[in-house]
Image 1: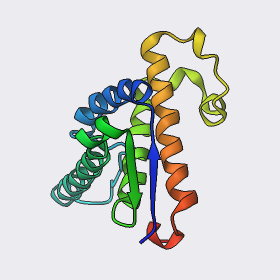
Image 2 (image 1 turned 135 degrees about the vertical axis):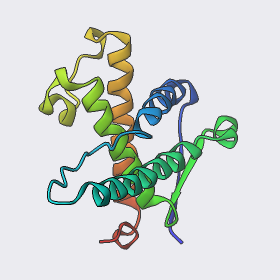
Image 3 (image 1 turned 180 degrees about the horizontal axis):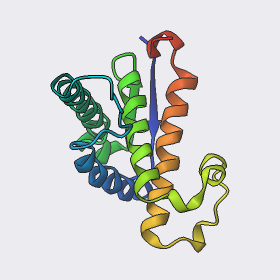
Image 4 (image 1 turned 30 degrees about the vertical axis):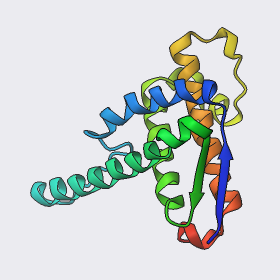
Length: 153
């Protein structure tokens, strides 16, 4: 089984985990990427959205579980065949919520190129942006270092 372990700096990552945890509460009630589903009857649509929310919540829970007591002891997180796809989706959900809630004013190009003067950002916006970049890096690590077949390709 392919596995990658990443050692992270606790003082840098800990504040970002607070941002993720804060957003996880809101993600529990609202899809990160809402669906219109206008051609479905209301009962079927509600059932489908409930299933998607349950899956989203579980994925975010798995993401947060990477940062357990062991992480705070050794600073290491591990990605493998069992969690790779779930972690990528959870990161995407949190990143979408970050964009919606905090990062709208930065613009698409700034978010994708990370061409932002961090010193010019207020602290909450700076933390949100750093969290956005952190989660993008996690996604890139998984995609680059784990076999494509793990991600369902």
